[in-house]
Length: 160
Image (tube, rainbow, N blue to C red):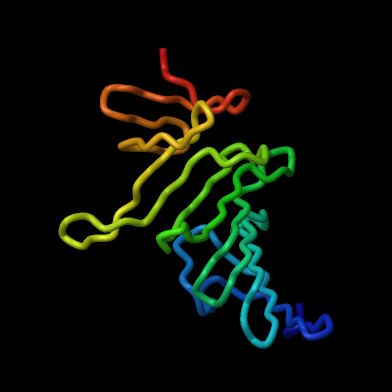
């Protein structure tokens, strides 16, 4: 692409990740297709060094992501969706649809520990309720001695 393009009042840029004004935590990101309105980014599409699209993010403003679709699978489909918002108490909430089936499977809520350090409270959606867990890596979750495993066909299950 030779310089930015315009589509009405939307500006479209392709940037090297190293030249991007925001924070990129993934060293595999090579280029970013960005769309801006009134000079504020609202859509970012990430590409790795092999030319594969790895994520698409909608932004509220330059620093606040609202929704992200992650990684295309081998068949060209999206495999994970993350919504970022706030709960009734104003705490930041991340809701993740692990298998992109339209249902959120994991919830992380920003909370503060006794020392004032920001941490996440982690929850999995099982048996139609949000169950708080000690650890969760999107395929396995632990609550004390209980281990839950994620099955793309049936959701979270207690490991037998």
